[in-house]
Length: 102
Image: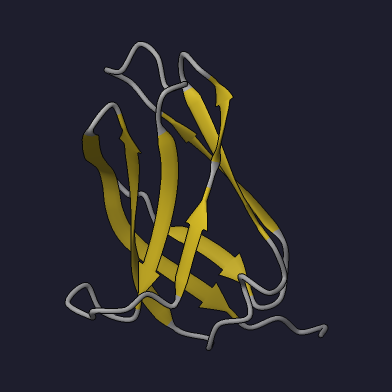
């Protein structure tokens, strides 16, 4: 399944994440981690999200500062932390695209 996230350089973006298999997301905090390579020790973007619907969905709201990364492909993962657990939900490509109008 393709879970690639594409953003435009210095643009805002809202990312909704639908979760199945967990009946209550309210005790969890979702995190988006973006790195140049999966093996890198540090992230280029680390963002906490919010639970939008405790039964199914959480959201990340990226700002223009968040999307001011170099124009290239990265790798990301989304995990949730709570109830003494860390659960990685997805890992895929995060692409920053050039805009014509800046």
